Image 1 (spheres, rainbow, N blue to C red):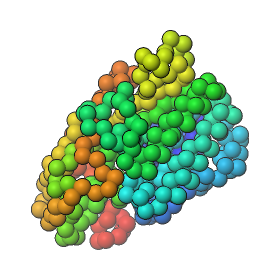
Image 2: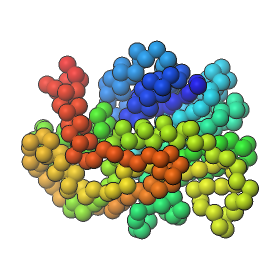
Image 3: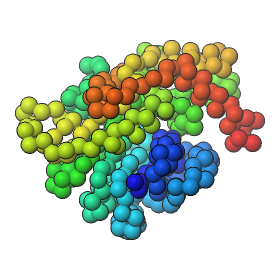
Image 4: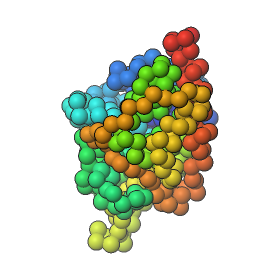
Length: 340
């Protein structure tokens, strides 16, 4: 099949491309290569996938509606895996307009491209952040997600609503994936595993929010990619018996679905830091501080629906995953350079 993957220079997107190409699919990938974080890391990820014979990279911005429309019309994709977005909870507090362009307008251009070119299935990235003020755990897709605590989370909830409207109006199959704290080799520099590892190696103090009393459903990159690859073959269908009053908000009478994709077993922040310290052989210098704006106390995915749909559960534990990340980090940034 021919796939469009957005955000291919990103952490998850680059790995998804590798898997799709290994399965024999043709993939066109787009990314705007913005400087939200180190572009050298994005280019390094692209260097890994550019040699793949069934892959083509095009630098393009999601908000460029004319270019996106022309790309869809020319290429006639079978399926789309839409992973590009402006990421980051705290950055959304400082730069809200960036999220309107990438996460709202950008999502709409993809929906329009799929609608007008009869794409068989759109899989897109949502986020565990949509659960917002929910205190009940584990988070289930049947839970209310009407109280986000950051603009980033609000845009991801908006993406789900926009997708549903297109599924309903145009009989267009869409699947949203609520990612839970993805980490691993070539991970994002704005995420805790990367920040902690860098500061510990540099002898700097790490800031630990809520005095260390936080929990995250850390999910290793390989497990995330496996879930994406499996779910893109599970195409939602019309369900004429579904009703708002009795049905789950993660399903619909339209060909629409939403799943949690996570490890399903939250780890305390202090235990995760301990795994990094063990992998590095260095004890961190710690500064304990209060909860920060936009943070949530605990994330914990109920992945029952995803398992029932695909038969897959996450396999990689924190010790193994952290060791793989630390090994990559030390190799990539040896002598302070980019793999020099």
